[in-house]
Length: 72
Image (tube, rainbow, N blue to C red; front, side):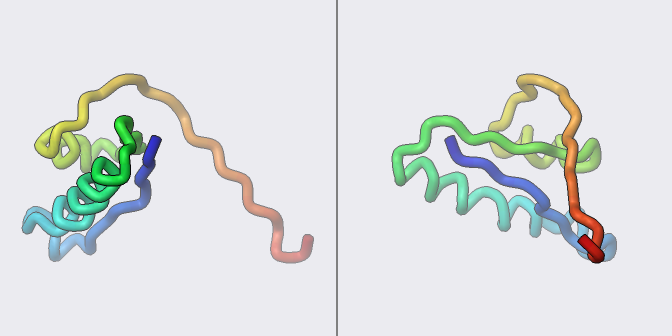
């Protein structure tokens, strides 16, 4: 399984295919290396980008992140 996350573009550059250009080549490389499942977590804003390159919504969920305090 290969995964991707945190693909973003600055607001002034959105809608120009940049996110697709950053996302699609690594997917092809993963396929070339034998990965048959690709997983990503998407914001609502990016769902259409991923659908256009062949992703299908499978499940919805929450992401939890923990970061230690700088003092820890």
